[in-house]
Length: 268
Image 1 (spheres, rainbow, N blue to C red):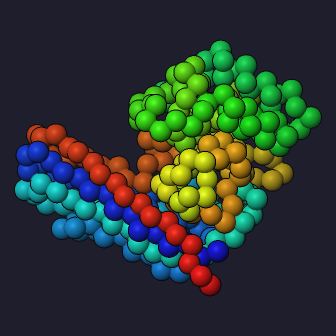
Image 2: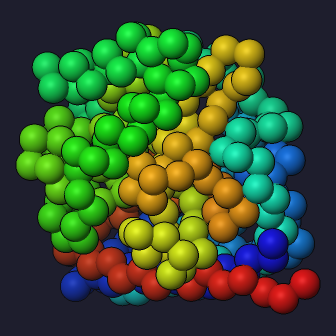
């Protein structure tokens, strides 16, 4: 499948700032399930800095924008050819060991309810079956309700209120999986709009590590494993560390953010 992406992130400041420094994870991952046909990231008024591939195999690119500046636009456009691998991350090179993803964060700390869900894995016939059962249980326990949570909502809070968005589904699955001793991580990327329950073109899901198979993606928000409709960008311990754009500004002033994302299928 050929997917085209047009992703615009616009930052506005109520007072001009002296400068902005950003770190991007906006380059599609290199693995057997996707091939970049063309891809471009531009930052209005920005200068590209150092770049490297981190231990998780993600491409990290630095940018700086000199001030005074009141508005910054980051635009991502490109085309990716995708293949359905039933969620398995085949051919992805990374140096970080799976055990690195057993560490909890503030967003993925497991409470008693999440530990109870983890028993779906520890009590299963095998780890893979347990992971599928856990992902299905998270889907049932947290209804997809846009606007019901914030960026700071934790996995435990989302589970307790029974509502959330894709970030919350991923965090809850990660927290419960780690409680069962299964390495788990947060993945950011894109989903072809209009093809899933969540309908979020900028999307997130989780990957769980199963010995003998490797990393496997699970998307509780859409009750499936990532397929050819998905473009994988990068990963981390949680939403904050896997964010496609992270940055800081120098100077006072409140920041507002507007994001538009369009992902469409192109005829081959």
